[in-house]
Image: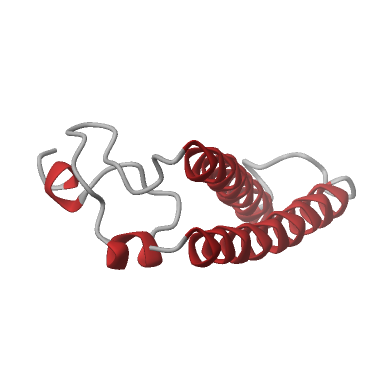
Length: 115
């Protein structure tokens, strides 16, 4: 894969993930703000458990998106180091189709299937 193509791929995924992080952070803030007006009595408030679940779910999604963003940063570093297409486990090549589907991947499909 050409370096320019890989850069565009990583940067596109990074921009999309940054938008997701922003949207999830906003959603989290909205849930927290809405819950400030609650009684805080989840046991007797039928909506309390739902709000707590939504907050936990959005927090988990936000953490995952932030982790994905960090992984894309590492992918950009691997690209600069000339090892973007090299599997970190076996040292073999990572297929271009796999990199297109998962720009932050660090392992080839063979190693991914060994779990």
